[in-house]
Length: 568
Ligand code: C2O
Ligand code: CU
Ligand code: CU
Image (cartoon, rainbow, N blue to C red):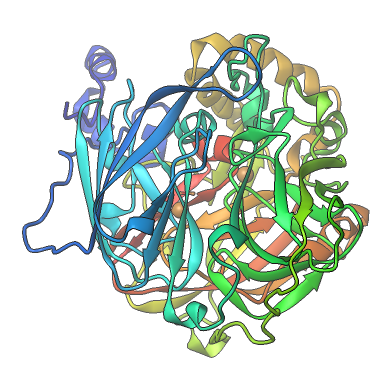
């Protein structure tokens, strides 16, 4: 179906005499506000005869059932893959998991992936972290319907790194990821290979997610406005799709490839015996040198490469990776309650285990941690096209809105500041807009009501409840409603963090998280705390077109906290 305006809207405009021209003349964000800013629906991309793939994969997304908890199997949505061409280690399953197989690629490979949608709803897959052309980046304008196939073709331009594949349909990304559609992508290159880091069974993907199950082992997902504002939180931690995950290891060094695949939950990862977390890489691959951290903050969409050395530990000994307590990522009241309608069982920022490691085998040799890991050319202001005029990414949040640059997502609504000349390096500044930290004058009544309208439209089922809840919370002080942390993600190439600054200096909450940020590596997602301004430097090379940026709290993203950069 081709649609730029849906038929009932069209009728509405005809009846009110406003007509189609009035619609066309409205700014796209006004159209979006009133539910009119529909995506185009394009025919699915086909294979191009001139592209000679080194690797070809059939990737299916479909409904499925997986046994997760004892008893009844859980209905999920799942990626299933088949290797058509390429090295045998390209695909590796995570046994018993709803997660898609780990995809392993090599820098320089030419890759073709045929995505077959067998879900009963539209979807499209995005390669989070990969530097690919706009038409194969999984922009929601490319969603395909049930029974359709979309062909991705690209060359792997990334350095060695861990990335993610997950759906990106407009307004339903969180729901599809929550129901199981996600997987890890590992890229290898020559620079990494020279280090002879732990591989094979000693390199372990650790995908951390939280889920909420009903009494019949079925997944419960957000229906309420409050879940969207705060993000949705489960009370069960799953690692690689399994509850109570335990890894049996030999007494030697391992490489843990950690990914936060939760829709909203932020973790503060630390070992329970207080030994430091040795980090060797971030979203965009290896750091220059390893660093030891007392703990590491990991927000949705972020990755971490951890060197975990169990040599010297006795057979039978155990170590637990925990999420330690912290505060300040959710508004005061919700933070204390734990976030999520159902959620005081596992409050965000409380102290709980993620998974445990048990030493079951003594070995005498273990690789040594390399002193130097990789070469990262640090950008400085003089490398940027706009050293005095950063591209703004303003976080605008209010009682009923989650936006960037003051506007909800709308297709084809590109601000002048969102037009980026191709092959430039840009200074960008992510910050909280006026009113973000409190009610102090930012929010007006009309604005609030418009926001409310948006919320209601998303599902008739939750509108009354959402409205009621929010009204109730108003009494508790709107100021507390406002401030929350947002993991901001930019599509396309990785960026570097130039600086982080906190309004009014550091506070008690910030002190609970500040030692957990890693600034020296390549990133594609950065956790921006309340009151914080983060400056980044990001290259926009090679490809023109629309590249999204959004909050990777996927409930926020689906509420409209997403925009496009038009690289031109
Ligand atoms: Cu992982 Cu646009 O997302
Ligand atoms: Cu992405
Ligand atoms: Cu957010």
